Image (tube, rainbow, N blue to C red):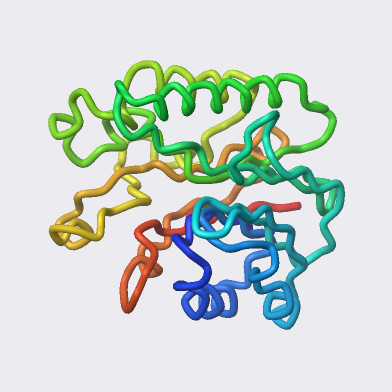
Length: 252
């Protein structure tokens, strides 16, 4: 089974790239963030033609999360608690529960959006604590947190900034403390594995990236994983997303 998470930074702008990528890699499940579409505009028919069932929680120009699956999705949950923004969707397929998350950016440490980010992460932690532990779980998405300095191209460039602050990192680790494993660090514990590069300043070419996109899973899944990688090729070429997909392969 192949599962991916990908912040596409607008399905409207990126659909040809997404369609090409799905055809090339044939993932079984894709957790998608920043669709930036309403449900009415979302390409349900085009995805069905490619063999995917889909669930979407849209918001128009901003946010938007989705799950694509080669098998039928059930028990879809849209939204996290009382959050009014389209940042969370969950569904079940093949006996697995999937969460697609788009965590608030935070903007700046003194911005109200930063407090919103921490509250959002706490709401996710509560959901994970209260989950049915008998059902295997994969949580993926753009978390807008670089968990350690290894996940930042130059920690000195981010002093006093979001994505690296101690409260954000603590909130992320609290998610892992609900018995989840960071799949991206299973085999690459000491190597950079950036997933996002700014469009500006030639950041991708220069290697100025962050690891802010993650696949997390419980022990039942983590023990079966054979490969986890960042598809840097998807960040190249014409009109790419500023994020690259993260893919995990495992026996299921």
